[in-house]
Image (cartoon, rainbow, N blue to C red; front, side, top):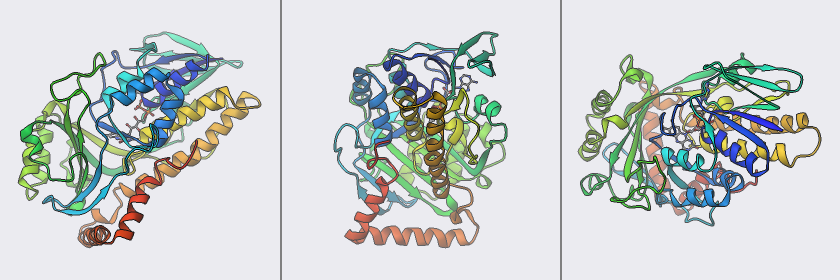
Length: 422
Ligand SMILES: Cc1cc2nc3c(=O)[nH]c(=O)nc-3n(C[C@H](O)[C@H](O)[C@H](O)COP(=O)(O)OP(=O)(O)OC[C@H]3O[C@@H](n4cnc5c(N)ncnc54)[C@H](O)[C@@H]3O)c2cc1C
């Protein structure tokens, strides 16, 4: 079997490793021209679903490299208000083993890990495919083609493979816009963050539906060292991201770049903790990016064939649960299993993969949207204040009552795959 993968991102690369390990002929085509193009600067949390998939698909030495290049695992999850007062702090579980834990990785580093030991055809922008008798030919913008027995669209949210296979499938604007950025971790910037955010995750829930996530990223190579991966400039940093309903942002914000995004963040947070504002101001403007948060509209089953999809190409989700990459990795592992160890005809195995992937993928889309969607109460003008007050009261009560805290802690893990095998 010859498999063509469109998209050398998180899911596509995991799939390619898994197929290659199983002795299947696989070729990956990526539109970016080099290993470092594109938006790779932010933190990705890898949960047990993601780790299980990576461990199953990557050669052991590459999985080991992945583990060795993760940031220090977060020890706490702190909920804060905009003055950085704690409402709830939840200790995170220490790793049970090399799969059942929460890993923090820089997306740039993860990309370089996934490119290790596998040839990717860079600069090959997929345009469309043609199906023949049992084979499928991919066409690229440079006029080249590639023919195989199965084509996998792993080409992300704006997937062209999906556009051709499922022209009726839609990706909607969730109504939420975010700005992300990175600040180098130094003695000065470290002092701007409150206790509990080190070494961990901070989530600020503020008036007007504004939220801000803070991830502290400290790498094994230390402040003065360098990543063992070539082309990986990742250094210790704090990753932040603010989000709000799009009405809170000026028109055209998603076209802003660099310093304008830092200014915009400061303009939206005038009464926030002065230390945190200094942290925003210290951001490397080149690391700042705006994102329109989008979400897939679930589609019913489609006729099975020799073209399939995985990851954001079929189930883009809001960051509400932090499982977009983990679900793409889960798809990759399940597709490898369907192609290599399932029983019965290939079409039946692909159908089985797609059925299951739609179930858990669209369930994750819905659950993520419920947590981070523009229609949440906190975004409404008057009732939003009451909703925030209710949220804070709940978090404070949870912080004080050990039984509630334990329940809350357990709920953080239920969607993250620690309790399932596929
Ligand atoms: C700021 C931010 C933080 C996030 N944090 C988390 C997190 O903590 N945990 C988590 O699980 N998820 C997280 N996600 C989501 C996660 O990054 C995505 O869900 C995940 O990368 C999807 O993987 P994928 O392989 O489907 O697509 P991608 O990783 O987007 O890869 C798609 C690839 O296809 C290529 N491509 C696109 N079109 C073409 C074409 N026409 N021809 C050839 N190649 C093409 C692209 O260049 C890209 O390399 C986050 C996302 C963002 C933006």
